[in-house]
Length: 164
Image 1 (spheres, rainbow, N blue to C red):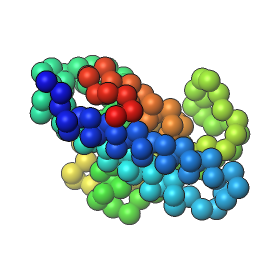
Image 2 (image 1 turned 45 degrees about the horizontal axis):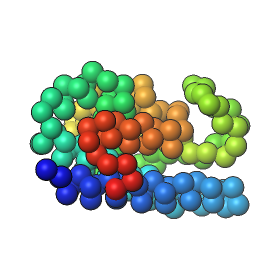
Image 3 (image 1 turned 180 degrees about the vertical axis):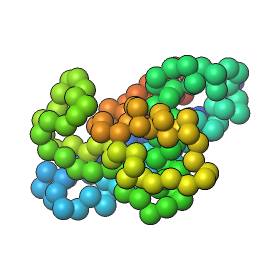
Image 4 (image 1 turned 60 degrees about the horizontal axis):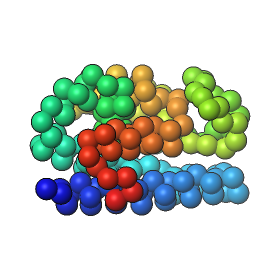
């Protein structure tokens, strides 16, 4: 049986990811205006969490598999960022040019948006240490597009259709 909520979530994530790509490309000509990128990143994080919660409720073994897989933990890192956006006025991403560390491959040398370090996002008592650790290890300093692609592949492995 098809889960219509997963199809809906995949459609939302795909559309938000495309808005993110367009906003990131626009930074080349308007480097000072990161608001469209921020909005798209938050929307992507929201859709990731919608899919994550749906799979937690409907997919046998999902939580354990997520805990034992780097792509699943990337989803938990995105969840941490979404929670920080929701519970405090943070800016979780920044525009960079040139080489950044940690270097990931394929390397990118142009304008791109990366996740800020975990300390920039702050903390509160509602935060999960596991989600914060996943963010610090798998998102911080990395290209946002790369981590969104990892999260999308994770959901596809659990039967979420690509591109809705």
